[in-house]
Length: 488
Image 1 (tube, rainbow, N blue to C red):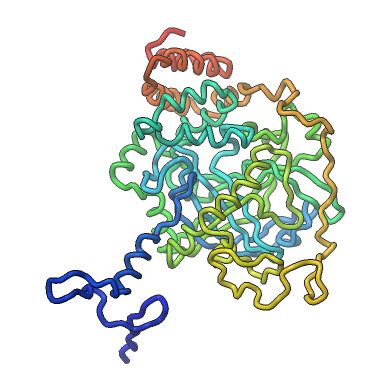
Image 2: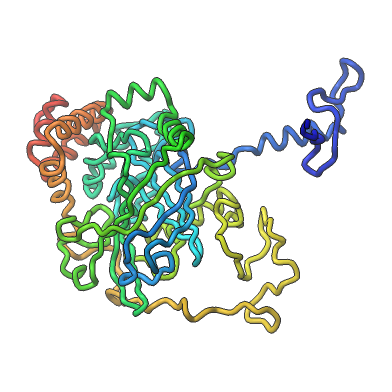
């Protein structure tokens, strides 16, 4: 039986007959103002693109499920982790961080790894990267750092000079720089990379006991990276390499999986940790804080419409659930504000009503109005609190435990001398973690990038960066200097 044809209509539902020809005064006359179909189509077309994300502009996404495989209820009262076997739906968005919407998936760049858990207690967003650290340890530096990864305001070109000038003047970036310029800076697609919550978070159990935690996602597909030459070759062949790989794999039933693991640090251990445990430029050594299995995440569904779900998906570290909390991580504290603010600018004040961002249970609050309100705006319900009419009440069960403040002294600066140790962990990464070939590749990648430094400050920038490399590992600095044909 032939499917019934649908009538062509305007956005307001009016059927119309002519879609391709404008209404004109005679066969060759002017177009008439009253052709409202023309206006509607052109006006909507002009507004089809929402603002591009300032970071994480290009990416791919998929739905799936998370299954709890190990009991961690001694650490957290989060309902999701209350027993093994619990499941929840997830949406994951992978992305390049500093690149633009039309950039290549194989650019040397960190990768975003953002997971939205649709839990019984609301949405939990774990918006991380494919690296356990980042370039900065204070969110106040974020706009300046990102400016160096974008385009020169004069030439509108990417600038190695801007980038290395910033790195050389901010030695805390060295740990992430070493990762970025290793082959880990060019992962082989999204399926074969690990993910990290990166920040330190907290877990609170039913006895209101708190521990600090880091989240890890370990790929089941086999961790793999690209050399610089391989990445460049793929860049010229397929700009959408990583997206195509993800879509094709899920399309043929080869569902990618990751194991979630956590590291746990007690408050007492945190007091005696060699570095600031909330510093985003540092890792917790696995030998001291071993990985604990938690569950398995599987991605098994590509969204039916990319724009609706991937482009409009919105992640925010501010979205936590009962049993999971924040930490004094300065970058995390800044992201608690910045990410929801970015989503309200990009998608509107009601962005959490968009289906991909909507929690699984109804929302009850006193927020009203604003652009794109699509849920009835709560009808005639009271829009203030306290009131004598509705049946909304605060559940004391979800009361957060008091925060123990570290000090009553407000200051801009860290006072622990170890907080300025920007070299020990990068040096360990280079000498003990990387293989000989990985060290060679890292050195060559650094040389290739720093060779692009130009201008009157070129030598000063190079020498300052070499001094940072030398403090991490003398051999690294000497070989980079040799590759750049400079004395050091």
